[in-house]
Image 1 (cartoon, helix red, strand yellow):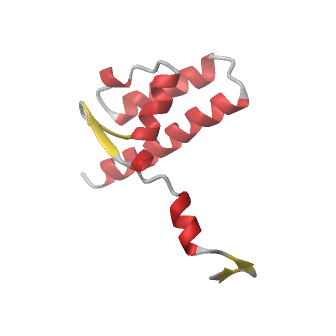
Image 2: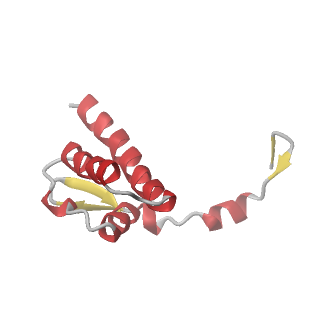
Length: 95
């Protein structure tokens, strides 16, 4: 397949996707992907005690704002924050 003049091999692209990391797990009231859980555990964020995605977002934001994180750490946490922010928006919109 050619997109914008660049050739892509669909089979190799599909093989590179880690579907397991994108599976959801229910943790209390939260639905988090395995990748998000892995990152939250890495930074010792107590997501299990969060009552909502908004509560978890505040914990992550606090850590990003208060700690001096290197770029990789900051990027990891911002990935989770963006992901759950989008999910929280849609959950609230559908209520």
